[in-house]
Amino acid sequence: VAPLESVPVSATDLATMVGVALLTWPLLRTGARVSRGEGAALLGVYLLYLIYLLRCQGC
Image (cartoon, rainbow, N blue to C red; front, side):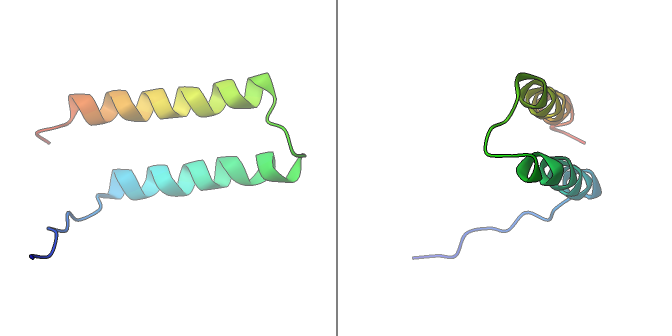
């Protein structure tokens, strides 16, 4: 048994996590349901971040 290797968190990853948390906070306060527009915004942020990760694999 060996410990898993730890990968450091980049500034972009940290900024993305904080940004999504701040974007999600008002959504949680508006009610129990996520509207179509709110869901589209979250999906858009996710897709942009995924594209960034795929393009920047060797960065």
